[in-house]
Length: 292
Image (cartoon, rainbow, N blue to C red):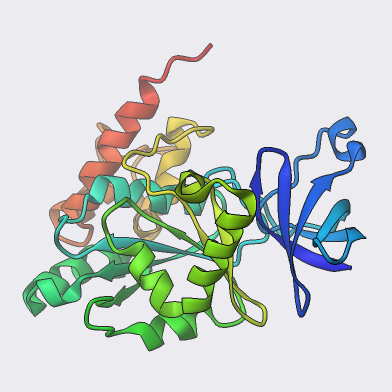
């Protein structure tokens, strides 16, 4: 039987099999020997040990489309990065860190601002002016008023989407609106593995409908950029690309160099000061990471 890993905890993997439900599985020893760790989102082949108790073994991992490091999930089509438009006010530095991590891992990101009912249209336009010129798609929704939900459903349809963002922005409310069954399924799963609410620090994959899944991840209050050099950072700011070829120096990192076309674009109002300030701050952060 083939299915998809929806959760992994303490050496057990919970595999969703279409039409058959969730099976509790262990990974066979061959994975350990090969140093391969099954991930949430992996498509797998299982052997059923007990059809009544829904227990089995994972015997084969099917080919992965991709594997993300943070969150640790596989076979992702896109990321829905959720922040609140207000209460709490968006932390642009954290939002940019999420976007950079998705660019770095080559996963398309869509920005979703929840709680649009708390802000005026001028505030919405301000948010648009920062991120639309970078090429990101933006959604403005309200879980409380159930507005914009159809836009999200269309976006998710037929895809596996990782949902990321800080705590307190209404991620759970949105997910429960998108799939009341997912909430029930999570409840069943928590009961089955007898760990209740303590499992929220692990990523889990929720089945919305055929071929449509959401990866719910823990809320991050901070996110450190790892695995990249400071010189790479500029390539994860898509809005720089149009100006870079015109910089005076090849390999310009757009910080202190004279004749920098990116900094000129910033002065001319073509690049958002919010984005550039975060770029400069993150560049310094990467520069100061000790190399061991």
